[in-house]
Image (cartoon, rainbow, N blue to C red; front, top):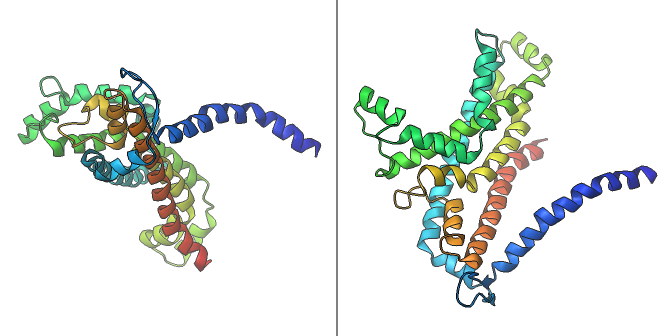
Length: 291
């Protein structure tokens, strides 16, 4: 009993901070989602309007378009990061010349703030001074202009996100691969299993918890990405890269529509929970039934 009291006493400061900086703002956003409020209007009164903000979401073409491009962005970015992260993790498990230097360079994007990443890619993709448009035009004769091409802008945002967050996936999977026991692999090799069979029947099932945890983290981040895209494309051209985070930003700050922006935020949170739950049920539940 004494140890339990000591544990709660030591956890109390963290719980208090989480409550005031996590629970309270969340409850405030949920409450505000059922109101209409423009603090910079002539009459800044908060008006209760029930579920009007959520009803508006169903018919808001800008929100529906943002939802579609966000889901596409999340799918391509997270899938690429997991595949590329696993390949790099396997590469780092082996010794090769310059491994330490390459591993350090590979990890550098993780220490950069998202807005810095967006600024770097903004400079690299600007047609007049960017290194990427220069070499694409010199080598392939392709004129890259993310301010005019919706496909190019979408593709560059995906590549930027992959460049920024693949090191996180790589480090996570390296830790998972290092912790694997050698006995199952030795027994499989003795039985004559090839690399593909070892991967599908031994490696993948054993590191699947680490992969799922990484996918959950990246899904939550990708669905609410704002800073990088806002700095790189501003959500354009048109609505090609107006992801949900950018949509919320535009509703809350330029338009000062705090009630509607809060409703969109609540829906994004709900969407994130549903996507993660579906992924968990689809991948974990069948395996538990077999067990």
